[in-house]
Length: 302
Image 1: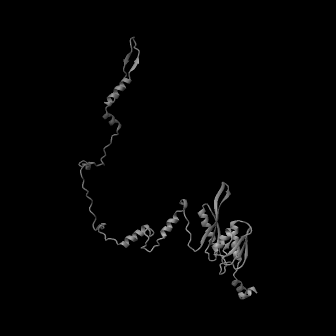
Image 2 (image 1 turned 30 degrees about the vertical axis):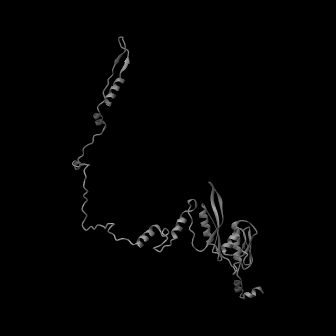
Image 3 (image 1 turned 60 degrees about the horizontal axis):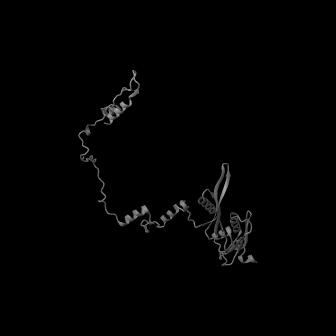
């Protein structure tokens, strides 16, 4: 019906209105109007003819009904094949085996007990180190007995051909609080990397600090580095570390508990820290001086 209606509409639209040749009213003269072909002929023309090939064998599906239940017939197993035991036939696992498998997958920190002899605090340490503030990576500190103290972190710029190159400079003091201390400096694009680099530099510049049994200096000494000058004086027990800035940090990381310090020159943190190290390196124990002179310690004050 739809095709017939379309054919009639096309025939009516082809009619033209024009005046007659011998007078009179208008005459309707139909042009050549052809009916549309049937739907079967349209599909026959538009769809390509599939050529029957002799290589394709479709006789298998002639007697198969898709609605029927087709039984599954697997091929026979090869000779000598032994099927693995099912899950129900396996021997039951003991509680120790289950706990060991659970610890191997999730770690010992979740259960709080270790069957494999692992430390229950190790996994917590790894979780804390993998992520830090704002999703940043935390640095793994070496367990060598040295503590780290950041003195200063500054943003520095370097003028290059294409503009300015921003980076961070960190000053770190490391020490074991037993007479070993070091000052290091490092630069990097990230603050964490700069601190790690400066801590490694400080560990490569460890110096020994001479101290008495009262954890103070054996004698007074001054040190300078660049425009910075530092004055160090021994103090009686109970005085504490009376110093400021980088001088105080260096003395505390070295393990000095009673001392007086004063910055006399520049206020630069790096120069004052290195001036403190220079002053400490000039100090000597009384027994070492007596040994070099070949005299007993009692004669040093005569």
